[in-house]
Length: 100
Image (tube, rainbow, N blue to C red; front, top):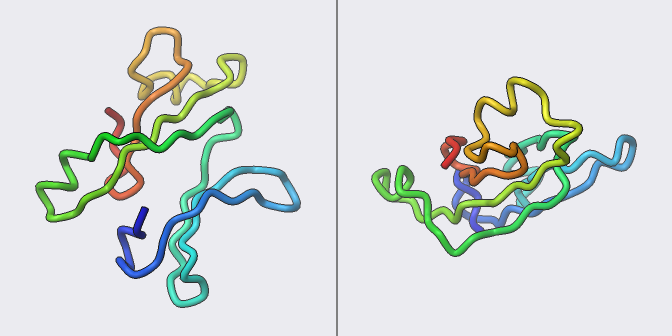
């Protein structure tokens, strides 16, 4: 998917070498320094065919991501934003960062 900030390069899921944590980064680095850190409880990221409707209103076409979590690691604050009662997954937009 295209970076919502620079609109030139693609976003890619990467892994930090030191910690093993996952994050999303623009492939246009160092020209674009967009990064989004993902929670440690994350077990799987899937790009959906669904488009974020909030972004469409702003003239952007951004695919939603489905994030799956290890329920043993989900914090109370994370559980508040996850839409499913079992707190295992949620749909999120990297451009507007709102849960769906």
